[in-house]
Length: 536
Image 1 (cartoon, rainbow, N blue to C red):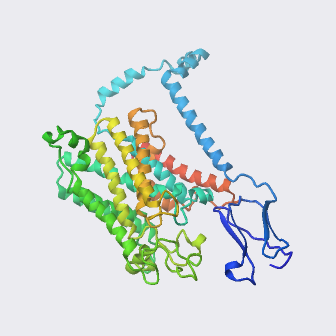
Image 2: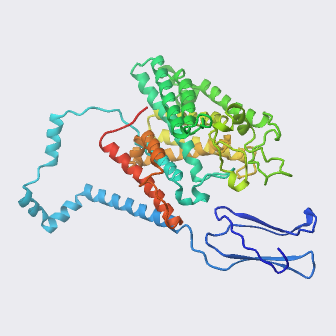
Image 3: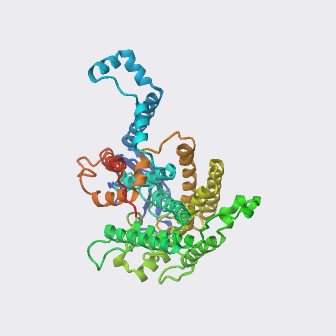
């Protein structure tokens, strides 16, 4: 750009942009005259004036907004308002029905006489219920934790919304380009964590009914094969030379196989009475009875850390955790180092032909090396994430009082959160092990587990303890999670779950993605209403 010249540049508004103006005829160390980091707003017009002062070594840099861009987050606020209004209406309607306000209102209007004259006297619902109970004896069913299904459904609805595009609000709902944490990064580890909770519930039920370990292990293998096979079908493609091996369901399958198998040989039929009398054992029996499980699972974390920091990667620094690419490092020394050891292991074992062909750091860091966020090395930490969910399930099984359960959930929330914060230095970039979903770092799984413990405590208190909330609508989705997930993956590119945008604005895209996710909520409700459940 010459003197008194100008140039127009279009920049991404999802993330802050670092701008640098340099002189061509100056040494590299002294070439920069203006450097600024700024987060531009969507549809905004800005002018950046660079004026040379009297001294050639001094420049005046000023950024001015030439228009007032609209708030790009207004569609989100409107959507939240609509759902909040619907929730309030449902709550008020339910309260009115329970209190008899509607019947009193109809009586006030004289509607009851009209209904009686047209349709006859309505029968007594209590009497009908009694007669039905006599004709059809009820079958006792084991009590199911609604909070767990609601939490599973909550995670899955967010996952579907994110997978469908999330209105292209990438800075909030998109995956982090590398280090850091967004809403999109939370739901998959939560889903794996919830699976760990479910393992405990199902195992104790099987053991209580006298099912042998051999039969249970057969069930574990069967579920592993089905989950892994579904993952290959959904993610793999049809070309055997390039089909993707890692994936969401594949990661879930391996995590389930390892944790369930280890727990199968550790699960106890019943507590020994003389040990329960001991105060320390009574309070810590969820840990003391399963100490060897902890040794096995911590060894997975140790293996992950050793491979990450000590495995030599050709052409890259040992222990490198960064995104690589031409913009990182000096003289493009890290251009092929994306993901460090995690990427190298996938390259050697699977080759890039059978991994995710792109990666979240590509757009920001201009990387050319593929990186699979569901790669082999991250499976080790996802196994530990599943095990932390298993720990929550043990709390449900071994401690009967809600207060004991909630306090332990909150305790684990604090412990895992503090350790995660210590590992990442309570910062995004400056820590021994940054929070990174692409690598499934140790700090990442501990941070997301901390949130999972906290949210389950909240869901459990609201739904199963106080019964202030039934878990609707997420409860329906959680009851049919595998069917909803597979259906959303297969039909996500078809109408009415998506369509070709007309205006391609945040408002239109958000409406389309919210409708797509909401339709699966309605479908799950219909499956629940007709008593249709898909189980593996």
